[in-house]
Length: 508
Image 1: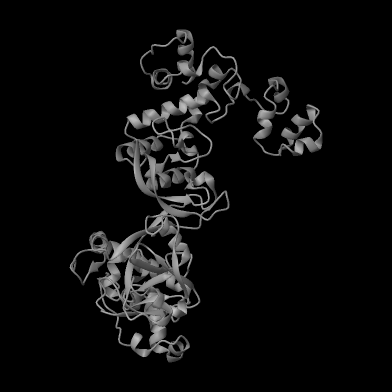
Image 2: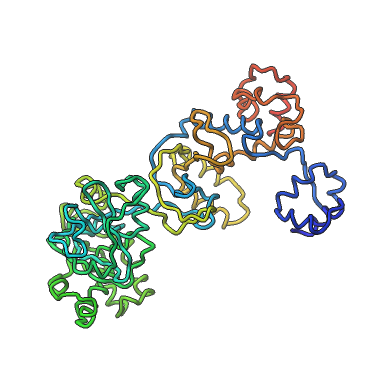
């Protein structure tokens, strides 16, 4: 607590222990609304307490303001209902917006293509319980265009995996964390509840024969990789050593080290017959970019994280923007063009599904690790082209007082698209046309600053808006708000014309 705040409270006769209870820097402000301006001037603070207000439906004036705001946005076509992937708290049972998070602010859903690598019968003893089902090792990839070059898939030997029901017929083998995300994306037999038929270690999966979409190899095998992270993706990884430096180095280790194969019980025929398959030609790197960059950077181990990270930075972006497909039905097309076509082909033919998860760990304020859910919500269309262009133009004419602030605005304008503006429960205003939902807090906060300009005229110094005032909340119709804030025509209202004019002038 700042020194001047403490001194103000002491001057009103509060004991030290009473002041300690008011450590919340906002609470003390509302604790002393009657403070006289002359008392505050002694401490270098000027404040118009008449403008304080509660920003929930407990304040009928503010509630009317937000309802008007939402109705106006909807009338303009800026609020739509849609099913979209959103960060979600299973514990709270609703989307977890930035201000609801303890960690992971600004994190967005990361979309993957989940490749269905089909387990070829007969099943080994530890997987016999799954017989009669279509069983897939489900690998999350950001690069579906590289699937032609699969030589194997990777599993984490000491990792924990489960066989989870997707529907009555299909089973995905992946981590429990990714299965929970899938359950909130309509990819679980029981919605929002992953059903696990069996649990395995990665060692149990090594050597499984698989048929993988687009792969030129009719059968590939699950092999061990010790650098897999189970907090990203599904814990199952496709291996494309022609274009992935990580895959190239890990496969080379198994090819050149018989002792490593023996350690994990890997048979020679699961590894040695599989050659690197050129799939993308990248200017300066050729059609085996991973091999070339690993040689150029003198990478000698799959555990050399820094050099492997450099190798990926050198090839991945250039491969996407300048690379050309040299195999498949899109042979000769730029990767940039072929990628969405190959992705759609996989999805349409049922060889893959879309999967999303938070791009980094997100914890809600309830202490719950969040997932990505496919939710039916109301959204504000901030990414709408014409609207965004107006915001960009406005930003150009703004004095942001620092380059860092301007960069922050530009970054946000770059990624902001549809923003969920509804929530199932909490504090706030009901969405006027769909009152099962509340207006999400940040969505009404985009304009609440405007309310300060006239709050003192409406509330007469009562932060709850329930004190004696010359205006009643029900008099604040949409026509009145339009007149006050949008230079609309004079409304038909029993509010005295002088007061209407005063509000209209106050907001300027």
